[in-house]
Amino acid sequence: MLRRTALAGALLVGVSIWQAPSAGAGYGPPLKDITHRYVGSAVTPAHLAERDYRAVLTREFDSVTPENEMKWGTLEATRGQYDWSGADELVRYAKKTRKTIRGHTLVWHSQLPSWVNDLSADELRTVLRQHITTVVSRFRGKVRAWDVVNEAFNEDGTRRNTVFQQKLGDGYIADAFRWARQADPSAKLYINDYNIEGVNPKSTATYDLVRSLRQQGVPIDGVGIQAHLSIQYGFPAGYRDNLRRFGALRMDIAITEADVRMPLPADSAKLATQAQYFKQLWDGCHATWRCVEFTTWGFTDRHSWVPDVFPGEGDACLFDANMRPKPAYRAINS
Ligand code: XIL
Figure 1 (cartoon, protein in one colour):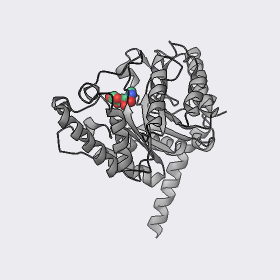
Figure 2 (spheres, helix red, strand yellow; figure 1 turned 45 degrees about the vertical axis):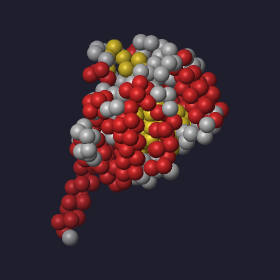
Figure 3 (cartoon, protein in one colour; figure 1 turned 180 degrees about the horizontal axis):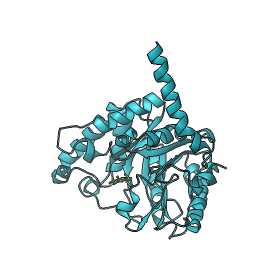
Figure 4 (tube, protein in one colour; figure 1 turned 90 degrees about the vertical axis):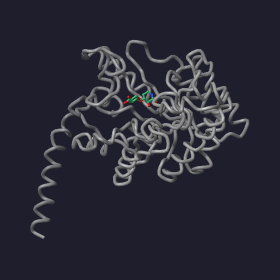
């Protein structure tokens, strides 16, 4: 008993050592407590071993998206051999901390196992159905919303020429939604894409597709807007109008992967612009009741996909590499 108390005491001291400085370092009330929307982050489960990473995630957010662990290439790199370890680790964390999960993603041309490219059309259809059914069933009742189809359009609004589009034709999207619904009737099903924040040919193509899917009775519930922004390109024109038009289709809207990158090194002017962009994204989501989720693609500059993919750019998150809240966090949280 004595030992247990001592241990509890040590833990408490440990927690307060960490929390005391952070409270004075720009943290506000947890983001998840200042809104009725889900507030999420992409998470790499391996990082949960970092104590400060886990603590900030647990404190601020109430939804998690596996950054890579539910992608086809991670789950089934070799045909027929599933590796659920990363996904399961995130599900365990979510259960323990009472977070909801955004599943990401079922049908995507990227991070696709190479063997999928070698199938005939008939085989591909069977395998795609199997993949969706297997993955969605496994997390049935645990995943709140799925990004069923990811990045299906080109910038000009034509269909991206993926292996699914080539071999299965336009109908693969409707099929994917039907198969996902069968496997978990309670999960919300989304189409997800980038560069569809504002009104432009790509977002209009997404709008037209969603409207037509709805008319045909295809089970689609929402549109996921990735929102990977850069301060170099200006804030997307028509963001609020775009959200409104999707809402008018009686679609849920989620901001699914928000980050705002900048040319490095950062300075206070760039951080101020970033703060403004995050705030506009956040406020626009809150301007329509149909926008039900605000998820960022990672929360700390310590772990972000940006520097790997956009050389010379970075610092795209709400918290810096030392977990200190940045001006963008304070802009949202004021
Ligand atoms: C990114 C991950 O963050 C990286 O770790 C990985 O190497 C590549 O994919 N749009 C998406 C996400 O839908 O799945 C991508 O995630 C970022 C762009």
